[in-house]
Each structure stands twice: as C-alpha cells, then as structure tokens.
Length: 92
Image (cartoon, rainbow, N blue to C red; front, side):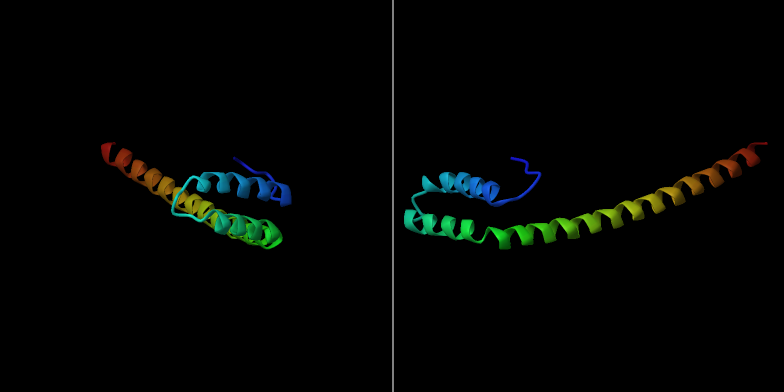
C-alpha cells in the first residue's frame, strides 16, 4: 500500500490490516493486540509527526547524495577526457 498523505483514516486502515495479520498468531494475546491497535489509532498525530520528520531527513540525505554523485561524475568525466587527450597525443 502506497500512501500519498498520512491522515487518521489511512493510519487506522494500516493498523487494522496489521492487526488482522497478527490475530492468527497463537503467541499474541487478542486483548493485548486490540489494546495496542487502539493506542496506535489514538496517537495518530504523534505517529504522523514522526513519519513526517523521517521523510524530511531522508529527503535531505538524498539531496546530499545526489550532489556528491554529480561532483564525482564530473571529476571522472574530466579525468577521462584528459586521459583521452594524452593517449591521442602519444599516438600522433
């Protein structure tokens, strides 16, 4: 499931789907599962803020990585051009 926007309804759907998956497990108490699901649904604003913070941090890291890769590519291309010029001069 891919979300464009995390809101109370979307989080409730995620919690419900996850709860269904865990209901069949014998090692998990049904009351505990229901309690945890209810707590997650009540705290949806806090969960949303945590997710938003993570997305923001990952976006910054991605931009830094792209910038570093662009610089490395420019250096590599420049070195290859210099090497190519040297080789052609030696052949001549």
